[in-house]
Each structure stands twice: as structure tokens, then as C-alpha cells.
Length: 153
Length: 416
Image 1 (spheres, rainbow over the protein chains, first blue to last red):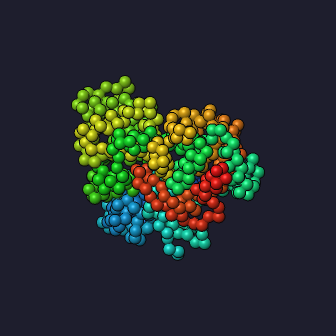
Image 2: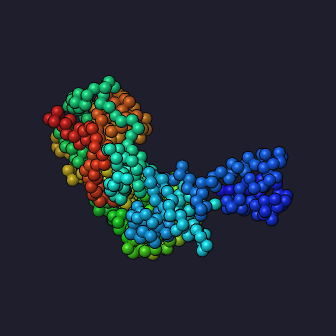
Image 3: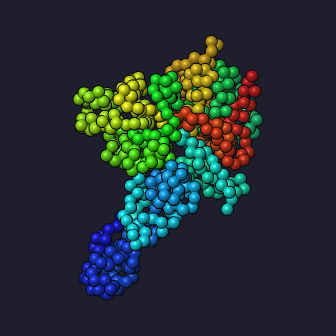
């Protein structure tokens, strides 16, 4: 997955502060967390010598557009619908202990993950442990995925 | 939105009974909780089969009559397939074989039949998948990759779910071990408990593990860290309820000395409490073994002779296709796609009848093809899960054609 350093390498690296960030590295982090857009860097958009960098940056930032508020991205083309994430997710287990918690398909609408037409789908994203002020770096859905179809950015 | 129907999936031998299917106007709109294999099963085949004789389209009655003529004329017919049929169709098939004096065999002949035989004759202990979910604390996938072959295996039964005695599920209460020649998807989940062995090294590894269990220093001809075997032996000894899922990798590797499995299990059970479950592939492969055993006392590779049913390797599908059978009826299988050409080459020279819902590679060379309803989708009945539990299968949608059971019974009426 794209890292802040990878994004930084494609920025002007002049620390001109025109984007209201103190450094280009800070702008790279802001791009990765989707609080800023490429268009907010005037030199990158206006100067001709950065055309190549701009195009590369747009390509590598494209997958982030589909990310949920918590940064969750599901690569449906990789998902085999095994349901490991459905059963492993602690929120699914807490909200549906006798369905998802026991290995069955979810029995109510309060769960985050469910498998539809052979692919995992996410809902109720505000329930995720990575959401909100008290978020933690939970990896319960990423680690059990054998095809690396789930990631957070 | 329409109300969903709870359905038992026939995508693989796990027979997941919690699938929700939304149907509108006799068409599947959406399927929930099923994996990709299950979803593919629900949406059935891309090209449905048509009834043909000598590759020309005919009505189904003509095709059935022609099939009956071929089987009646043959001196040594073979009835093969059956793993994708309901138990009812399998029983009809066994009766047809009896009527014809034919050989009957299923895909279990070159799959898990040998393991199922050991379990059915009581040589090795087995348990149900519910026992695994509620009680198992150590699970071993040996030569098996359920994450690819049975995608919901780990999430529904063997590793991730919280069970009665395993409330903390995979996080603390369960240990998953993978022994395989390649780092499969399942091995990735087992992480530190993946034991990579060379191809054909299973028997030696099993003996080394038995040495480890008995407190001797294991010896191996190939390069493997002996300390890891001793660590594995210690984990197995501590297990309260262990299960070994036997995959085809292990079966093919040790089939010449299969007694080793029962020897290993009895050694293991001196120290611990382990059970064995075969990783059957097709949804009712084990059902055929149970049904044939009930009728004849043997699980596969049976010839019905004047002196009654006789088992033997020479009656297996592989041997019969190579030399022996002078007509073949295939039900719900695609031997040209699943078996090597060296075995199936003769199929173009002998009369071949195919009963299948889909058009496939075998239907392109078959002398007679008879379409039938897809089991579990258009046709209901019963099936046996990979652990031996009998399950009811209800049909999802209305089909236009005959079920495979009805096709077999119609052929039987014409030959007798």
C-alpha cells in the first residue's frame, strides 16, 4: 500500500507552505489521510516540471477514493467470500454473538462485515474500533484474510 | 425486497445450512453468507446441457431410450460420477448397476475414499464439525488447503468461531497447524505453525512425529529442524480435543502405506484425544460411500456379478476406463476435465452417456447427453456432509427438466 514517504517523493519538496502545511512531508501525510487534495499544492498543479509527478501521484492516490471513513478498503476482486473477517471482527461478535460469533452468517443488521454474492461488504462503519475519537489500531479483519483483500489506509 | 429463503449450499461438502437466498420470479436475485464457490453454484452453469444422440439434438425421451439400449448391449458397463447427485439419485444408480450387472464407482475412488473407508470400518476415530466448533482446541490441516477448497471451513467450524468450550475462539483458545508442501492460503493463517515438508515427505514426517511423541529424537532424511517437530509433538500432547483434517496431499503421498494413518492416530491417542475428518470435495461424495456401503458392504469400486457385489481395484474408474469397460455412463461429473488424458483417451472409442445439468468438456465427445436438474438448486433430497452427517437439501427454484434420479429410474425401466 502507498506510504507517506512514497507520496512525499513525488511532491516538490520545497516546503513552500502554500498548502498551509508546514512541510511537504506534512502535506504528504495529509494526502494519505485524505484531509487534503493534490489540487491544494499550487506548485504541483501549475509548474510544468511536476507534470510527471502529478500524474503518478493521481494514480497512486486513486484507490484511496473508495476508502471508508476509517480508511477501510475492500478489494472485491481478491475476496473469496470465506467470511473469516465476518467471524473475527470483534464488533460483529459483540453485536451478533450467536450468529457471526459462532461462525454463521450475520443474523442482524448491526454488524460491520457480511458476505453478499460471494464478496464481503462493509456497513455500520461508525461501529468500527478504528472510528472516532477513541480509535485503536485494530487489525482483527486484516490478519485473518488469506487473500489480503482488506486493508486500511 | 422479497423474503429470503434459508438454503443448504451444495457448492462443496461443507453443506453450509445458513445461506440466505433472495428469489424473484423463479430467479436468484441475491445470495448472502455463501462464499464464491457457493455463489457460483447458485447461479448454476453458463451453458446448460441439451439432450443429444451422436451430437445431434433430440428430445429427452429418445436420448433416454438410446442410453438404455447402449447399457443393455454392453457386456461390462461402468456407471461413474455420483458425487454431485443427491443420495436418492445415488441409490437409484446403485440399483441400476445391480440390474445391469455393471461396475459402479464414484470420484471418491481417487479422492478421499481410502480415508472414509478407515473411518467407516472403525480404524480411526472421527467426529462431527459441530464437535470441532464447540470443543476443538488444536486443528491440523495436513495436505489440505481449506481456504481454497472449502472457503468457509475455518470461519464456520474449525478455527475462528467461538464454541461452547472455546469462548475466546481463535484468539486464545485454538491452535491451527498446517503441514503442507507449499505455503498455501491456509498456511498463511497458521503463520508460525506452518510446517513445510518436501513432496512425498509426509510418511517420514509422520514417523518423526510419532518418535517425538514417544520421547525419542526424530530422524529425517531431509533437512528439517528437529526441535520444531518436538515442539509440535508437545502441542499435540497438550491438546484436549484435537482434529486432523486430511487433505488429498496427504492421501496421495501415503496411499501405498495407508495403515500408517491408523498407527499414527493410535500412537497420538495414547497421549491425547485426536479425531480425523476427510476433506471431501464434492457435496455428496461421502453420501455415495455411505449408500453403497449400506447396499453392498463396500464403499466404492464395486462390480455386480452373478455371485453378488465384488469389490476390487480392477473395478475402479481409473482401471475400467483404461481397459475393461465397454460402455460408460457418467452422472454429474466431467472426467475429461478432471482426469488425465492417459486414462480418459479410451472414452472416444467406447459408447459414452452423460447425465449432467451443464454442457462440459465430456459432453462434447459423449454419444448421448441427457440434461437433468442441478442437485440442490432445482432438485432436493438428502446429502452427507464431509464429516458423515446427513443433511436435507431443499430445491431453490423450479426446474423444467427431469432430476438425475428420474433419468436413472427411466433408464432402469427401459432396460428391465
